[in-house]
Image 1 (tube, rainbow, N blue to C red):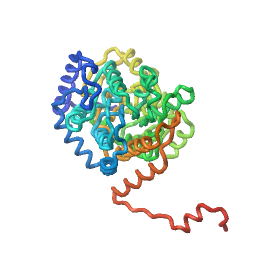
Image 2: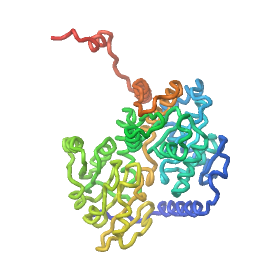
Image 3: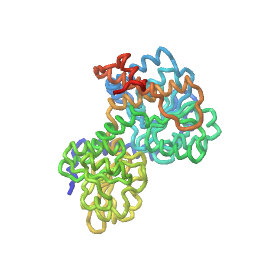
Image 4: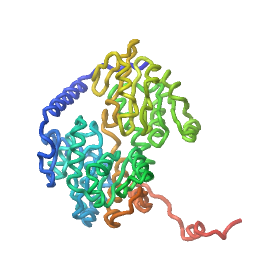
Length: 458
């Protein structure tokens, strides 16, 4: 059984800050349209007075992103994005701020909104506006209406290139702003969830703009998804609850690249990990990696901590909640807040106690059991922590920047989902190795000839 720790003083301070933000959000009556949306200084953020602290975070993280910093220097000299209006729907974090700085250094007019209502770092958003002249529309804890006003504010600038984290911006571009679709050179998608959605649109003939699947780049999913999600997910759970994972039964739903990372990191902290999967090949891989593989209906009876990371809906459902132990922790690390069936959980509970400790809600079951939902069921690594480490985002965002330069050079791509060019991948990996002080071998001319020939043999 997992018991939540006592609330410490810094948690209380954080809770007070969140409460004050909630009040400010409720008091906000003016829409984004009331602000000048056609200028570089356009914004809708919580408080510009937070900018000084945000700038410190941005510059601190910048030191841990050497590949992106090097690209920023190149972009500053070459201006490959000169005059290009760009719109980004990403998690508004210090790492994202450094990507936006790089795009602006390349000559782009950049606007950014949040891709998740709970992932915004308000001090970072303020600094992006005040210190770096980047248009930002993002407030931590914003409601649904504000979230979509912010998406619209970015598209009202008529971007010719977009970056997305979950495909919400592209979805709006296909509906309310469909008249602009023909002018978009391409969009870059950062998530597995978004790429899945966009490939479905392509298969249905509904896709109206070219898309580059940045998520599918090896420099992204092999590192960002595995090491970034693996570490930051557990970071979020531990920050929110203080739980000792060693000795717990931790259930990981999904064994894609994100699930692999979460499972391996949980095992490294001493957890007894169960993997739940629907894909037989991935389930077999999990078993051969040494994890126990089980159906969720069986895992629900014994798990202490549940982590969903599938990209699908209702992975944890009412039938599972009915089987869970008292004190169970529920966390989601998939992009949308649909992996845990929160409406079903709410309906089953006799009482919902909000913020029993910051970012943790207690669902009291009729039989006396308590189930704890972290971060409102949203991305636990960003709702309860600060997201991926900067060192891994360095590669993902360097890939984003280089793809943007590639698209700008290519012009409008054919309307389909494209892979990241292999030379972009090689450049990012080589720059990262150099930044880490690692040298590798190169093939000799004779070795290259051998690999490209077929005549040599035994």
